[in-house]
Length: 218
Image (cartoon, rainbow, N blue to C red):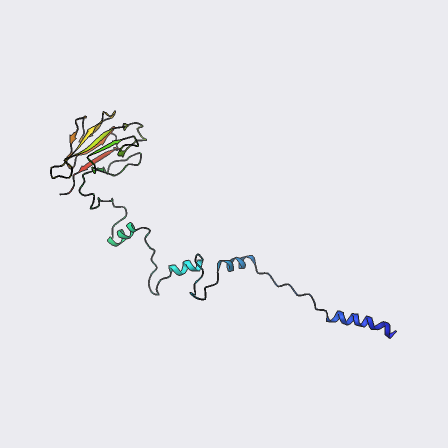
């Protein structure tokens, strides 16, 4: 009987020393895991988070204690305007390299229906103006389709680069014509003087393609 109990006791002893199954650890919440994922460990060499992380962006935006944070200007032009205290809404003035050219300046009363250059420079002996893409100055109207002819006008600089240079405008047999100070011009053209008001196409209110001529500064 004792011999029969031996194996039973051995089995029971084995059961007593058998390790209980480990209790599974609680999993962190998905939100905590996401937060940890967004916070990469800092580099031991630099003490900063890897490039591209939120901490890296914050470190780049950090400023010295006691100073207010300042956003960098988005462009060199805005930086210059900030330094000069100029408003970004002010119209651009011709730069020093363009002051030697005469130009047509878009009238303040103009309301173009399509994009048009606000300054047209007489920087060649002859400039073509019209609706064709091949023209030096392309101009078109969505308010009055085909108001501007394919080859509408020609801007000419005579004796260019000399003290005797002068500027003229010629109509290229356009359908709706060109006027200077309200007077229609022909193929023979008309010499321009500072302050002359040039209109291309139909006269409307408000005008669509009305320019003011300005001679270069001497």
